[in-house]
Image 1 (cartoon, rainbow, N blue to C red):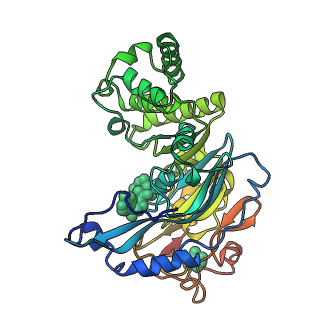
Image 2 (image 1 turned 60 degrees about the vertical axis):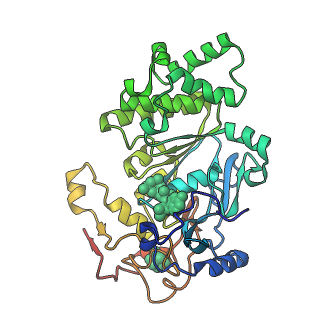
Length: 398
Ligand SMILES: Nc1ncnc2c1ncn2[C@@H]1O[C@H](COP(=O)(O)OP(=O)(O)OP(=O)(O)O)[C@@H](O)[C@H]1O
Ligand code: SF4
Ligand SMILES: [Mg+2]
């Protein structure tokens, strides 16, 4: 695959604020080429999960990387480093399942979703959709594959053209894929779609600003459904909505999945949303998956220190449990993805960090329990209590 050249390059003259934030990545280019050639840029090879072995897999992502070049120069543009937004992610999603992706802002969730759909060109790795390598598809086969993979965006208002009526928004996608053939068939289909997402037929003549946030997201979902997709990548589908409306949209997604056999990749920073909707969950940190398990296992028994910290911040409804449970406060910001820490990328914030391996050796995503993959050298010892938190800058209390 190509380098990520040509994809939303950063500004080209002088140092942009983003580049300044990424200071330290200068001269990363040569190393980057070498790293890619030697296969060391991404995470070490991940073990396959028992949860997907022999299963009917719709989406398989192998060691996917999306690196954005940081360019500088007034007259001659040169690449001074890379933003390692996604850096070696391997996962598989079964047909009909909902896979949730969680992690802090900036950890690469959206870029991973866009890389899977090839809305951004991956730097390395492969995406197999229903057995087909998306990277190798040329114009027409790629267009056909794209029909089967749709995206639902976070902000329904900005993702819907305000000058287009709902009818024209919905018909546009159908026309692009040759699915809007005769007027009466199209009208029937539009009515079916609106009914499926719980909107009246009268909505067709209206414009996006005439709807509430929840209704607009229903239009966004209807737009994704116009082309009969198999996979929907939903990027923060409810985070822009009022809490009271979030449950309705989540229920709608679940109903549509049951009715149409859809497969979902749901990206969300709200752990409660992911817990509710996802069958399995992947936790991302600085461009990599650090843990993956069924929703039940992850929330009951997180094994990676980062997941433990994330989950310990979620309030528990039972006041007795809430008062006594362990809480892990992480200090320090998420490091820059242009200059990620060596070894385990979490070592600069990990309360369980050890003097050996953590800062030198990048842990592979290994299956510690059936269907439960973790990227931590000491996950077993941490789980058994043989290793306790050592980092004084972080606090663990219960
Ligand atoms: N086109 C781009 N050019 C350069 N850097 C980019 C580009 N798109 C994303 N990035 C950077 O890649 C990293 C990952 O961004 P991404 O949007 O994928 O994160 P995210 O996990 O979706 O965050 P959020 O939860 O805030 O949506 C960030 O540091 C971001 O600034
Ligand atoms: S490998 Fe080390 S630094 Fe990384 S999560 Fe495990 S204990 Fe923490
Ligand atoms: Mg995002």
